[in-house]
Length: 131
Image (cartoon, rainbow, N blue to C red; front, top):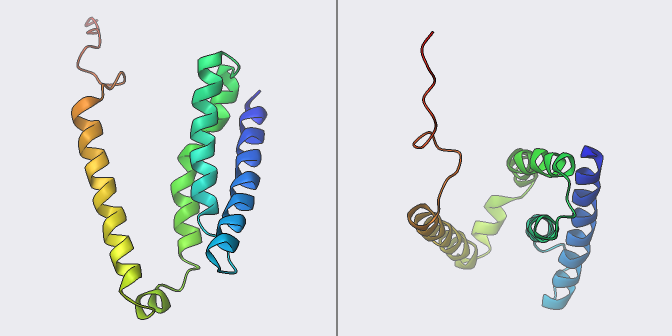
């Protein structure tokens, strides 16, 4: 059943690449624009939707969780292929968008930290009896 989570990821990846290519064509560049990010957002939304409807077994969710954990190393490897120096020389738009994205992420983390509840914390965990 874990393979179904991987199949869901594959579907989201292909859909994200397709939508990233369409977005690139729409804004007039001949490259994929945000395909991996679109794929991960699509995966998050589909996982939440299927979980609410009860259509995602725990084993399949484990496959999705595995690839979710693998997302950061994959993105770092993909970013290593980008020509950052050319982007910076291309104009201040690259720097402005990087700082704006970092600021939005910092704000979102702050909001989530203050409003969210973590069910995995040890604050309310039962104490183990000593032997």
